Length: 288
Ligand SMILES: [Zn+2]
Image (tube, rainbow, N blue to C red):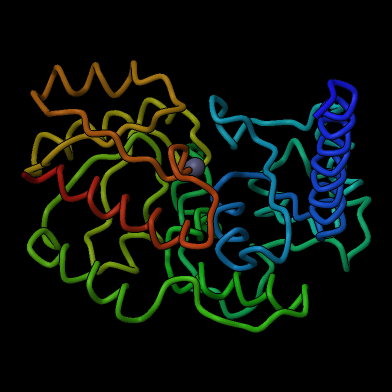
């Protein structure tokens, strides 16, 4: 074969490969784009849609979703998206203005979804009797399935659970031995998880928005810690653990990492059941 012919063959192959890459790219770009505010909702969306849509999320892994406001790049993304999913205006206060401008058929506000399992948390340290809806509802698998069904309905794809009854029962069984144990969490985020898995509600250092508690509440907490047999303090990867570390040293309690945002979870079709499975495993280590 002449050099010219070899060159011609190479160029022809390169064109074929480039063509294939282009087809794959076009196919990917014609799939609907789902953009979620926080990663746990992307985990639910990825499990709900499989290959039927692209899923992206906005809050960077090193930031707390409680005090995140949308940068310009995120605004562009929600405009491009076919479906935007967020928790709601009380949780993602920094995003509320931008979300309010989206057409309702493009926006899914999970705190406003009917039929999700509820949980109430203390509103703030000033008024310890005022309660509000706990925004961490993705931590109850019943809610995970419910949110997934809504996403599937919006996309017009078959409705199916993203975590099965059997999987939930198996995970529940793993936690039976520690159902009466007490624990301390960095912020009040695990009420939904405790309800779903028949666990006791834990004590928390910070409130449900990740805010520092007032002096009176902190004093009460220390009194409660002194009187309770606590297994550990759960800390989260994206928060500084200074306040937790001080209490851990004072009461000789181990710090255990628990990741309610699923920061190390891949986005795939089994993502949600894997994420809940990891949480259950991490939770168990508190009492081992
Ligand atoms: Zn939280």
